[in-house]
Length: 349
Image 1: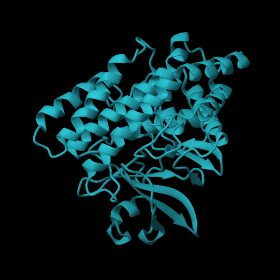
Image 2: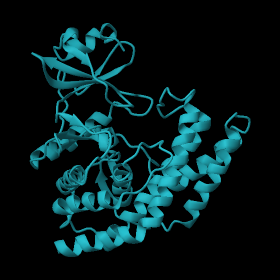
Image 3: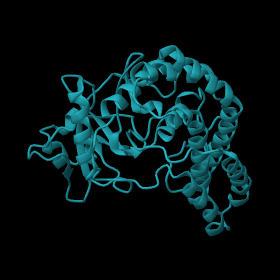
Image 4: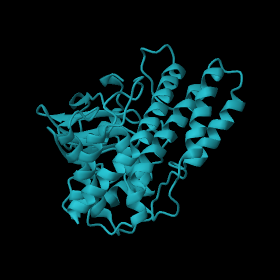
């Protein structure tokens, strides 16, 4: 979107001149700009994707970030409009928000154990600050990490899109995904915790190589530790792009990530089942993501795609294949990952 297309009423809502808002190449869900004053980024202006999120999500962000700030954690905070509102709705129904700026660096992948360890420590600190905090979420995404539901939807789309040109390419991938899912032992009845909900490494803001804050807080929710850390470690411990044909689960990055996490969250009264769920959680969320990519190869309606592919379906097909192979890599290395985690926990006890 060009600068001239930014709604001037949204800029006015925060006393920001349209010329002071620069396009920032960030985020796949919400359109994002940096608010700049005297050549310094001081805030982030975003147009909320209301196909996925409802404006009431800002009520949750406000409560949770206040808690984080009270506990001494750095976090982006919503900047109220001139009218004292947490968001602004334009005449066309567009929902805008402005947040304080945090950090100076976003990493698209984890390139070293030091980055992994720092990210792990930040997430552990985030979880520690929210542990035991009671909050009823105004906005919820039921089924976000209901892997069984995602498997059912994948089977359904094979029927509803039986005439799609990629159907016969997706079908064998769906069979592999289903087989991996059937073999996986999923922990039951884990206690709910307040989770970030989308801990890919690009949602961790850094100053240099030091992780300082989590962003993209629309996905805050009650969840379980296996899904929360599984999603993080799936992102952090694969050094390659999610459509790369030869992904692998890097055990050194896993160990560094968990070392950092245990530094700040190791004393939390998690159950034994929760700690035992971490490694299976990585495999579960990777399988889940493979199913979502495979499904979207046919539906072509959700994930963004790289234009080096002719169409979204082909990119999602490549991503599904890559996530299947990553899940296999996690499975092959699961025993050693468990041993490394046990050693780290023993050393910190």
